[in-house]
Amino acid sequence: MTGRREERWIVFALLLPALVLYGACFIWPTGVLLSRSVTEAGELSLVNYRELLETPLYLGVIWTTLRISVVTTVVCLVIGYPVAMLMERAGPRARILLLLAVTVPYWLDYIVRTYSWMVLLGRYGFVNQVLMWLGLVDVPYSHLSSELAVLVGTIQVMLPLMILALFAAMTRIDRTLMDAAAAHGASAWRAFRTVYLPLSMPGVIAGALLTFVNTVGFYITPALLGGPRQTMISQSIETLAAKLFDWPMAATVSVVLLVISLAILVVFNRFFGLERLAGGDR
Amino acid sequence: MISRTEARVLWFCATVALFYLLFPVVVVMTVSFSSSKFLDFPPPGYSLQWYRALLDEGWLSSYWITFQVGTLTALFSTLVGVPAAFALARYDFPFRRSFEALLLAAIIVPPIIKAISLYLFFAPIGLANTVLGLVLGHTVTGVPYVVINLLATLKGYDRDLERAAQAHGATPLQAIRTVTLPVLAPSVLVGAVFAFLQSAQELLVALFLLGTVEKPLAVRMWEGVRISLSPTIAAASGTLVVLALAALAVVALALRSRRRAPA
Image (tube, rainbow over all chains, first blue to last red; front, side):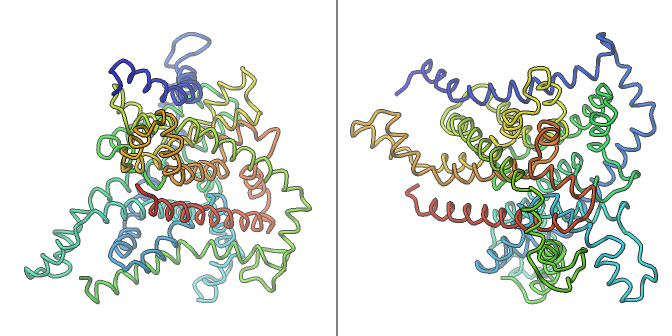
C-alpha cells in the first residue's frame, strides 16, 4: 500500500496538467479581466461600475437578458417535461427513438439551428407562406428582429438540454410508487401531482439552472434573430470589446455576467455536483 | 402502468415538441439540396449545386482549420483530463470540491468571457491569432467533458483486475496501461468526441483568438449568415448535421463496447 506522503505526490502529479492549464488559461485571464474593470488610468477605481449603474442602456440590456432567460427556462420546462416523462415511461425501442430525436439537434451547431429559423421566419419564409395561406396575414413581413423570434429560436436551442436533465432525474424514480398510488385509489392526475412531480423535482431544478445559465450567456441566436432592442449581455460585451474597443466597460459588463453565472454555479454545485452534467452540457 | 389517456396526452405533447425541435433541421437539410438560387422551402427541385459551391468558394480551408483545432483540442483535453479523472476517482484530497467546482465553472462560464479574457491575456504574449492559442482556449472547455465521461466508468471499475495484474508481476503503471486503460478506452473516446465537437462548433473564442487571420468553420458560417442567407450556408450546415450524426454513431458504438467490457 502506498503511504500518505507518497499518495499526496501522486495526486499532485495527476492534477498538475489540469492545474497548469486552468491557472494559465482560465483563472489568470479572468483575473486580468476583473482587474480591468476596477482600474482607471492605472489606479484603483470604481468609476466603471458607476457608469454601468448610471447608464440606462446597460441596465436595459441586463433586464432584457434576465427576462428572456426566465421565459426561456419556464417554456422549456413546460414543453420539455412531458417529452422527458414519455421518454422515461416508454418501452425500450420508443425510448431510443425519442432519445435520438432529442440528441441529434442537441449536438447540432447553434449557428445551423439559428440559420434554419432565419430561413423559416424571413419575409418570404415558410412561416409567412403558411400564415398567408391560412388568411391570417395579407402582406408578408419579416418576423425577424423581434423578441418573439429570439424566444422561438432560443427555446428550441435550449430544449434538448432541459429534456435530458429532466430525463436523467426521472430514471431515478421508482416506477412502482405510481402503481402503489393507483392501487390505493389515486387518479392518474393525483398520483402524478402528489408522487411523480415531487420526485422529479431534482430534474426540474437541475434543468432549470442549466437552461437559465446557458441562456444568460447566450450569444449566437439572440444576435441573429433579435434586433437592437433584444440586445443581450454577451452581445453588448462583444460590441464594447470588438467594435468600440472600450475594454474597461467590456470588462465591467463581463463581471456582471460572471457574477450571475457563478451564483448559479454555486447553487448547482451545492445540490448536484459535477457528475450530474454527465452526458454533457455544452 | 401507464394509462391510455395518460399515454395519449404525453404522445401528443411530445409530438408537438419534437416537431418544433426537428422541423428546422429538416428544412436546412432540404434547402441544402435545392436547385433554386433562393432559399425556397419547399424547394422547386433538387441538385448538389450548393455543395459544389462550398468547394468553389474555398470552404475547404475552413474545414481543415477546424479539423486541426478540434483534433488538437481533443488530444490536449484527453492528456489533461484522464489523469485528473484518476485523481478524482481514486484519491481523497483537500480542495477536492473546489477542483470539481473549477471544472464545472469551465463549462458554465459564458464563452464571451472566455473569449475576451483570453484575448486580453494572449495578445501581449503572442498567442493571439495562433492555432495553439485557440486550441488552449478550447481545451479549457474540453477537459471537463473528458473528466465527466471517465469518472462514472472509473468509479464502477473493479480495481481487483489491476491488483491481479500486479500480483502476477506487472508494475503499477504496466497494470494500468495493459489492463485498466483498454477497459476505459471507450469512455475516454466519448470524452474526446465531445471535446472535438464543442471545439468545432464554438464561435466566440474562435472569433477573438483566430478569426482575424484564419476562418475556422464556425467563424466562416457566422460571417456568411450575417452577410447573406446564401444556400451555401445550408450546404455547410448539411455537413455539420453529418458531423453530429457521425459523432453520435461513434459514441453509441463506444457505449456498447463499454457495456460488454468486464467492468
